[in-house]
Image 1: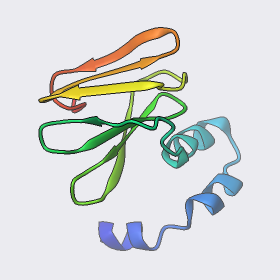
Image 2 (image 1 turned 180 degrees about the vertical axis):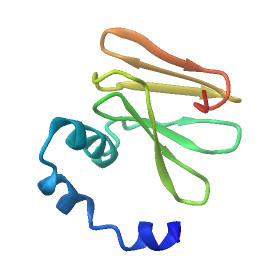
Image 3 (image 1 turned 180 degrees about the horizontal axis):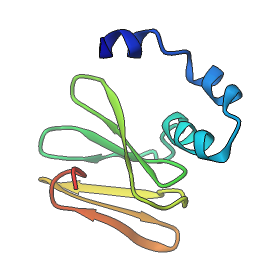
Length: 105
């Protein structure tokens, strides 16, 4: 059932056009941002981490699936570093986000 909902969901462009309030637009906009940094942070599992706008870290898993980590800010993430399971991200204003478990917490 969840698979059917995901597969039959309208494209993100249509969802963005139909958003009528800021509360519905903001999470959709965060999902739609593309990676902005050229160099990726790489963890021990070979996942790639790229900075993006709206405080997002875009994650490309080894199987090719994309996901994101929300850092809780709206600033653009301009740098991401990873070593082992430690993940650090920063903005032009300085260090912002650190995690010891590849962004899970």
